[in-house]
Image (cartoon, rainbow, N blue to C red; front, side, top):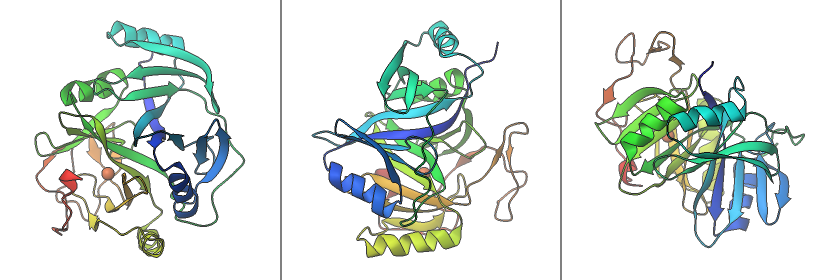
Length: 294
Ligand SMILES: [Fe+2]
């Protein structure tokens, strides 16, 4: 029988204390479109999925749910059974939200709530016509308590590949597809979001996005610079709830069959394999904001 395999991060559901500002930010700045509003919860789409961002009103900010899509080779019941064998409790939920009729709800060892699903409704809203309009939601980075168990959970229970580290504990990168990372797990004694990241088209899109952010009052707090781990050219800014948002392009592509990254002229060694990096910036640039402490 196939093993449980997640292949993409599909959505992030935010608790927000500034719901209107967050929805405006995703509409007017990020270029997302509203696909549905139910009971005060706003579902926003980047193009095709029913939702890629969910804004849920709350008296605090934070992450309510992360949504991951399964490869569909197993039924939800079979996925649940395999998780159960590994000592992981989960619940199958039916018709609890729009866009996804059946999903598995569970918690990772850090305490994040995850939703795993095989099918999501497709919308007709399409890509936005103004704003940044990223290609996709690419990855999340989160501070994690029980970070070693959390890394093992994503690798052993959900089928992620370990790619790189920065330092022995600071940043741990895992991929569930050919992107260098879908997850960046940062060792901590608390669990909370470090940043959420969206993929852009290319470097010109990176420049245009910084111009647009500046015009709309969202200053860049770090970057642009090329990272070491992943080699993505990245900028970071704050959304209206002060969550850190990364916009990136040019991320390394993993070849899981070979355990290497597709060669690029800027790679420090060939073939480039998963390794431990010591610094954040491949260009050696330093910024006032310490990304390790945002
Ligand atoms: Fe990132």
